Image (cartoon, rainbow, N blue to C red; front, side, top):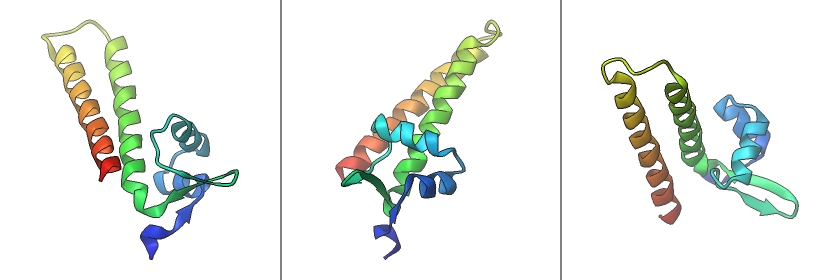
Length: 102
């Protein structure tokens, strides 16, 4: 069954088009679900939605950082964008928490 297949960090990185270091960093921080097999770390293929959510969360955090560092607010658009990105980050985190419980 494809969803039961175990993946390496390199497999996950290839699926998401990110560096292996990104996968390992997010594994250590607990943002990517994984399992230990002795000293090996493996990822279930069925958890790819969680991995994609973690990547989305990372992109949103980067967007927020760029907005915060951006030029002064013009007409409230920057402040509104920061508020919306913060809401999106909260939703992604809640979705990840819900998925881990079910």
